[in-house]
Image 1 (tube, one colour):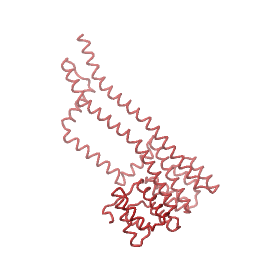
Image 2 (image 1 turned 135 degrees about the vertical axis):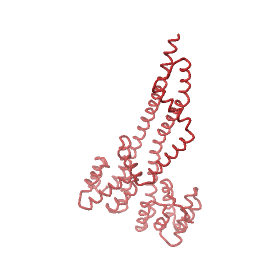
Image 3 (image 1 turned 180 degrees about the horizontal axis):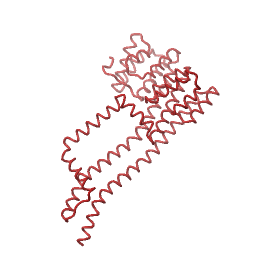
Length: 351
């Protein structure tokens, strides 16, 4: 049955599906029958649900691309490429290319996610240690200082007051904090303004901006490479590439570039004016166009930028991890030092 709720397959699932469809096509099994077999062998319920929906649609004598479009579970790029494969009679080759595309896209997303998760976890641990220090350790030092007739410095006293307030009001502060964080995440992910803010941050932030530009360059290259190899004209290829950029601002800049090309601007000048791609990238595309091998050049460029992104992610992780440890050490050391110094002075005066 068709899924009752919308199911959006992830890149890894799309890669698996495209690979399986390519195998079905090459084996000579009728596609509707092959989709039925795939649905029966699917491990995940969401995959089985989508495949059963595809099978149901195809029993009505619909082509695969229309069945995908009716389910609303597949990205527009995949649907259009599938339609091109059906029209050209090369669906197996197109599906093989799509499987490679989504597998590489999934690997790239996995690397970015892995590089960002550890620093995020470390940052949360830092906050937890600071909260524990303020809420549990500082009160003990305050009592010790008070027993000796001393008092805590203003900075430490302020932290202690804050920690005491948080501890006493935690029964409503914690749910409020969770609600605010959840609302912020939902707003950033689901609202148009929130998504644009995230997309803008990806391009503008000092460290992440250059990294994400390389990611978009790699994705642009591999997508355009497959499209040009399939015999699609540049204008249509650019239109389809907009859908896989995963960034509204990048898609808008590519759309503006396409409009300039339609009005007679030089292709590579228009790409340069987007300020998305490095000059070396534009230069290599121009050379590939002159030799008539732009699709091959783009494939090599995408591989090169994937390697560069991997290298940048490794360097970023290698810098952020020790930096966060140093910051945590300085914060904890500063808090303890402001408390320990008065205690040392009192002990010295007693001695």
